[in-house]
Amino acid sequence: MRGLKYILLFFTVCLQAQITIKGKLNDADKKEPIPFASIGSMQNNAAVMSDEKGVFNLILKTAEPTDTIKFYAIGYKELLVPIKELKLDGVNNLTLVQGSFDLEEVEVNAKKIFTKKIGVTKYDKSNCSGFIDIGNNWKGVETAIRLSNSDNKLLKVKDFSFYIIKNTLPDSLTFRLNFYSANKFYPTRNILKKSIIFKTAVKQGEVTLDLSSYTISAYSDFYVGLECLMEKVSISDFCFSGSNPEPSYVRESAFNKWKKIRGGGAAFNVTVLYSKKY
Image (cartoon, rainbow, N blue to C red; front, side, top):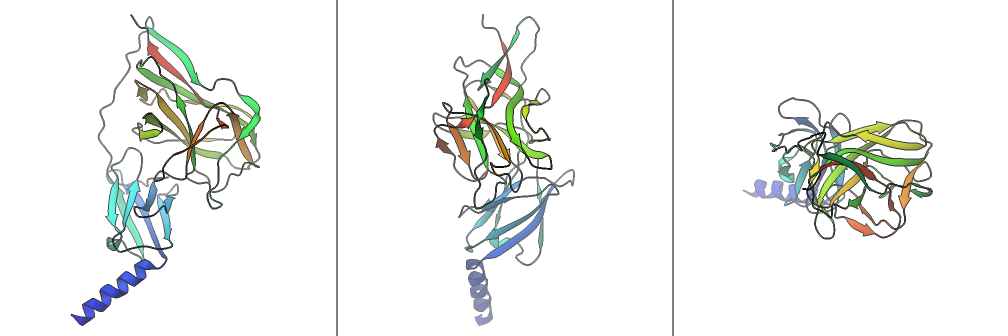
């Protein structure tokens, strides 16, 4: 009994010190790596992303025995694992199960379907906006703007566009595009059924991403967010067109709260399909 108490005490002391949790995330059915999933502590703001091979390395400066680690990826059911059940001196091989979703389609009829752009459609090429680094790290940082659907029509998103003012980085830029439902003040639930990850090597000019193969629809206001999937992309190397009248919503990771910043919002826009009102 005395030995058991010693082991438990040792385990508690270890968790209160800095620890590292290493591992890999795979799809439970396909057995394929899950890239750019979010992994973080439920008791503090520490969060990281898996790389393109699903490998992650979460460092916690302090940890409690009661803490739980959350594993989240778009299109999958989130996984919560008590920290006491994870290996601290080896590799944790974990799997995520795909979620089941009811997909809603917009019936496209050439005589009844119309298109329009919503968001910031005029690019101010002198307004250089970018991602804010968190502790000299940009990976997982996201910026979003609110898109108006004041008529509460059923809208289907056809494409997304933004304008790169400057890009001096040698490799392709990697981003994730996210869409969120909205409450009165902030983005809420991610409405995507699968992750939209894209790369671009554009040095200057408009970038348009075709989203016609995705089912992205909304009946009310919604948010579009651009998430950085690169370790370092300072504004001195990369920036996109912003809009001073447009408020921006930013967050450090998928586990952090959104913050509203007035002035200097991103100049994002989407093309949507909608049915004519009778």
